[in-house]
Image (cartoon, rainbow, N blue to C red; front, side, top):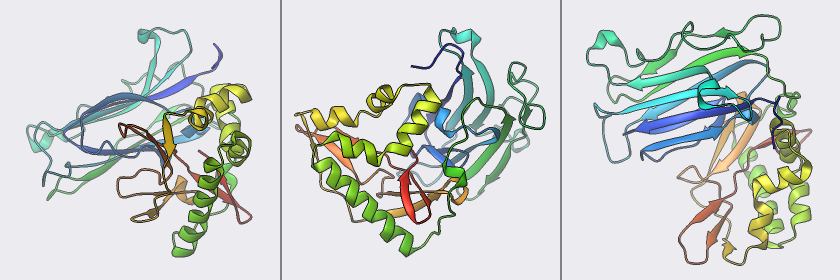
Amino acid sequence: MPSFDHPVYVLEVDCQQLELQVRLNDISILDSNHGKPLTCELPANLQMLDGENILEARFGPPADSEFIRQDASFSLALVRSFPGETETQRKKITSLNFNIPPTPEHGAFANSPGPTELDASALDPAPGGAVKIGKINESLDDATRTGVASRSIRLAVPFARWDWPACDEIQDNDATFISLLDEYRHFWTLLNARNPSPVFNFLALKLKAITAAWHMTDEQARDAIEIGDMLRCDEIDLRPLRERGLKLMILGNGKLAKIVDRDGDSPVYFREKDGSLDHYIPLTFCRSRAQWQVAF
């Protein structure tokens, strides 16, 4: 588990009457809430970078609505804390709050705290400069009220440099999709064999990142991703790999890639034998010297 001097970053999310996707440093942290009300906290240590970090929200009306409703809203808050701290001791370091304004001059993000209202006093300076919280950049489509909003914060984080930013640029084309789909097929084959050891070998880079981000031992990192439990569980079955309706997503400013289905879910998943629940296995890859590795 994280040590008492090791920070924990989480993204606090509240969303109502909206389809919402959230990225941190162009890495998916919330693929989609499918237009359903959502209040949750999402771990963010793995997505944090030493230096500039960009929080981005992509939003629009739910699938059953043509336009965004007047009562639609979302709030995102990137929060830093240490194990053992109380709720009041947690530091909100950047945020995005959206709601339909009563009048146009108020602006859809008028309720977002300004840089001086956010708590940067206890943060470590970014490499080469002070902590800096950016203004909100927004792009709204007046016709449908769909939009994108982002905000940056520049600070130091005490994690080792991740491997994926130094990996190769990934091209968004059919060749990449075919090559990456083969990796999903190979991973599915490993899961189907029900032998944890080669599965964990396949996920070695991801496990390395988890140990660094959350200050865990190797065993704790393997337990955290829960795949070993799924392989040992008699109450869930590995479902056939989904190969229809898939699309390639390029993330991490061109350094990461994943394949998802129409709902934004991984094509690799387990299902409870009573059909009550699906367990998706998220896989985000990087590539170095033509070799794919699971980064997240």
